[in-house]
Amino acid sequence: MQKTRKVILIFLWLVLLYSFLRMVFYLMYFSKNDFSPTEMVTMIYWGFRMDISGIFYLNLGFFIYYFLLEDLLPPGARRLVTVSLLSVINLPLLAVNIIDLAYYRFNLRRSTVDIFRVAADSFPALGAFWKTWWYLFVLFIIISFVSVIVFNRILKRSSYSKEGYLKRNLLPFLCFFLVTGLLARGLSERPIIPSTPLLYLPAQYQALATNSTVTILYSLVKRQTILKEKNYYSVSGLDTLFTIRHQLKSEEPFNKMNVVVFIMESFAKEYADDRDPLRAKTPFIDSIMTESIICNNAYANGLESNKGIVALLGGIPPFFDEPFYYSSYSNNSIRGIGTLLKEEGYNTNFFMGAGYDHFGFARFSKMLGIDNYYSMNDYGNNSHYDGNWGIYDHYFLPYAATQLVKKKSPFFSVIFNISTHFPHTLPDSLKAQFSIKGQDASQNSISYFDYSLRLFFDAIKNEPWYKKTIFVFSADHNIYLHGREKAGLYKNFRIPVFFHLPGQRIHQSIDKPVQQLDIVPTILDMLHYKKPFMSFGHPVSDTIPGIVFNHFGDLYQAIDSSYLFGYNEKAEQPAYLYNFKSDPMLVKDLLVKGQPPDQHAVKMEEYLRAVLQYFNYSMIKNKLSEK
Image (cartoon, rainbow, N blue to C red; front, side, top):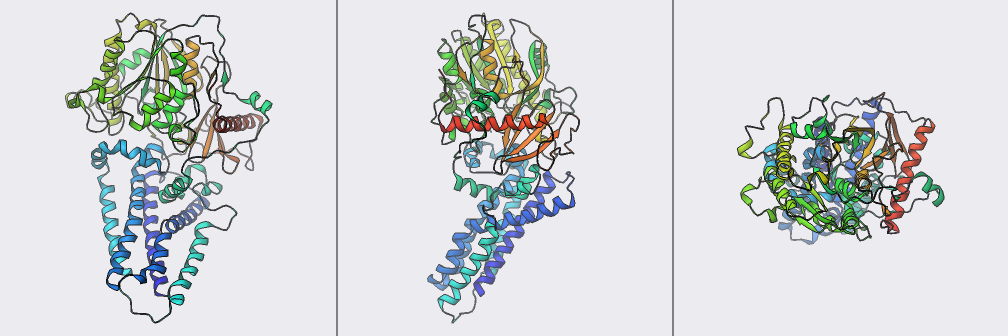
């Protein structure tokens, strides 16, 4: 029984570490939430259950080795090998749990295998992460050091046992495996997975109830998302609720205006809202917006850059855990905005001051039919490198302008800025100018981007094609400033979206909900494009009421002008319903016995389920292209 006792002690030590990290996670992100006593007890219970699951599955190989194979090693080498194996298995995943103490504020979810894709592009910014979150690095070193000591003491050489192999090793292993395996899996028909706590807790507490080890392991096993066809509605019934087939009607001939889309990194709605204390000084953007079509209630469809770009440029909802272009459906045929406009004689371009194919954007550009990709490699002056992500905006945006001046009209171009990304690094020569009193580092980077944008427009405003150009502005995502409050369920998706047509000097406000998915259809509508195309969005000029949808974790949301509706796709049931107009802090869940209370809410559920059915069908059957 010695081995069983030691394994239990190791297990308890790991549970203690995970509980400690959950407490830190709670203090950082959830301490301001008003948990009811029932919610708190349920959260603690599921926290332990998820920790046991994660530790068991992660260490299953170690348990097999320790009970069944360790005795085959020379006595003098056993403890060294065992402690080393235990450390190599557990310390990296503990590191991911510690990383998520910081990373959660950027994506509002526990990490999956996608973190390894992001890590390669984020490695140059490691120094900045260290500077900001040095204490998390120190915490990992302390936990690692103490854990190795604890493992050593627990596994110190024991007295020789005369018991046979069956009694000494095999039977204890089977008993331990059955008991802990049962706790890890659970007694229900379906095993415990990261979304299981959603059945017992409000959606916004899922990240607190689980741990990063479980989400990493689950995503490794799951690998890429495999969709199943939904059959909520008949084919004819589905088309009455939602369709991705579009053919715009216009009496005007096709208008070959140039199109320039600015994807504004981490540009939260708050930075452009005069009523918000986080309002940043952006005099140039303000001047543009006085002659723009402004979408006052615009939302992102995802929480990360590699999700936002799929919705914004592809018209495809970011419903996968992984980006669409990394999914098993990435080989599907799509006729992207680049392809559609090239057929009309357009030159197509993508500009980003980071390295080539940063976050996979180059490959997605090719999927969309965008031919020319300009990165820091093409810029060719590393003295303007910010030390983290790429070329400073006030250098790269004017560079993009000089390239556009060389293009023959009509052209379609995307410009993705980088300097508003954490750590919000400013060039030394402009630090004094943009160290603005009353603003934090993120606000200062927004003001600096505003300055860089003015330099871009100064370089092109006298070009003959300037007034024949549509300038589109949209954030890739919010910067997640509301992670601690329940209202973050909708606030975390709010972004600025506006359309600037300098040749028409239009000033118009659109108050209905608008989403990133609506941008491509709106561009085509402004060009009077009449051919069929596929998109999950609609032109902002449509008279239909706006309903936006987004996805995070295992939840899908629909948002209209008043209601926020959450849907648990795994359980196939509503998760929550709030009237955020009358209840902005989302205090009262309006679901009645888990069901929508009125016809308005029922229609929101029907609409979201229709979107999900259409999405799965289109991906599975490869129906994203239309000619």
